[in-house]
Image (cartoon, rainbow, N blue to C red; front, side, top):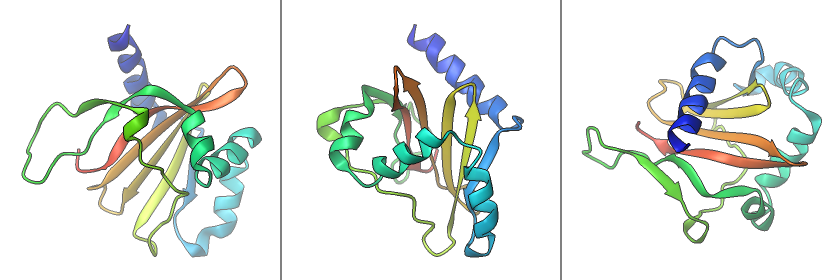
Length: 151
């Protein structure tokens, strides 16, 4: 079951790049109107959820499916390894709202059949973080997390 779910999620990520519902949430200060325009295309309830998710640690913990499937970043000097991980609630580190670090990072959202994938990366795509959110019942939940780093 886990392999099937991971295969489906991988397919979503790979096909999401060609999907017409690709949204850039923040590229630079000069593109504020574009940012506002594209985030309007995401579900309204997701935008309010996402805002609270990055500001409220208790809310965040209540909206993560633990153990959370994901990948850890490679350690210094590690060339390749099995980076699969199940993130645990007791080890979770609060994740704040996106900060482009003075234009050093970009953030994109891809909405593919109700799964919203957030990809944050530097301009060379050397450092990448991926989070996937899905609605479970009436609530948005974090269902996958790929730690920021080399992959």
